Each structure stands twice: as C-alpha cells, then as structure tokens.
Image 1 (cartoon, one colour):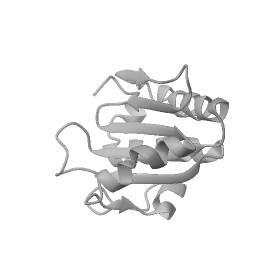
Image 2 (cartoon, helix red, strand yellow; image 1 turned 90 degrees about the vertical axis):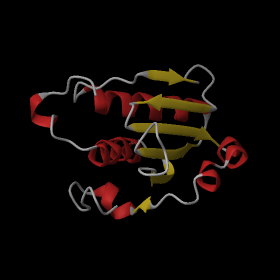
Image 3 (tube, helix red, strand yellow; image 1 turned 90 degrees about the horizontal axis):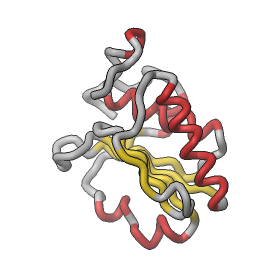
Image 4 (spheres, rainbow, N blue to C red; image 1 turned 135 degrees about the vertical axis):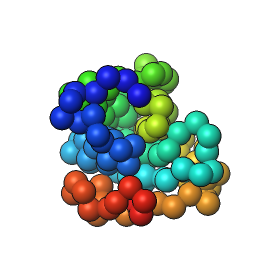
Length: 136
C-alpha cells in the first residue's frame, strides 16, 4: 500500500472502500454497491461499484473519489476510462472502484460475475465504523 497519512495508516481496505463510497454518494452516485471479494479474488479485497447519470457525472464521481483518497495520501495505481466517461476504473490495489454510465454497467454485469461476493450493507457505507473488518 502507498504511504498514507499517519492518521489513516491503520485504515483497513474495508474502511477505504467505505471512504470511496461516501465520497461518491456525496456527489449523487446511483446504485452504490461494495462487494467483498476477499477469499475469491487474488488481486483485490473490495470492488466499489456505482452508476453515474451522464458521462460528465461519471467523470465527476471519479474525481470526487480520487480527491477523497488523495486527502489520505492515496493515489490510484492505475486509472482507466476517465476520458470517455463510460466506465472509469480506479485501482487502489486493495480497493478497485468501478464507475459506470447507464447500460455499460448492465452489459458488463460485474455483480453477476462476482455473485458469490458478499455485499457491504449500504448503512455501513453511510457511517464510519458501523461494520467490522471481518463482517461486512
């Protein structure tokens, strides 16, 4: 993991996924879902999925998530799709954020592909510390 501000150095991947989710919800992300893929994925712990209402909204959501995590001294290892705004992927290693526009999310159906992954409850995204690391 990249160097994190000392105050946030102890944050778990679940807490970082929640932080990304809260930043997106603050910018009116739709249909936010966090999938816990620990144990079924070798490359990440959580997927944060959301939908934007337009390509510009998708880009704005990506910027909001990046800004929120940059404040914690985290930057994505990779960013894809920001220019087009149809599917933006922000890879933070332990947390991968997918921001979709409209039918693109339905077409790729990541929730269906990862149907075995437990979902983090929406109320756990809205407030900090409401779910433990072991229990989404």
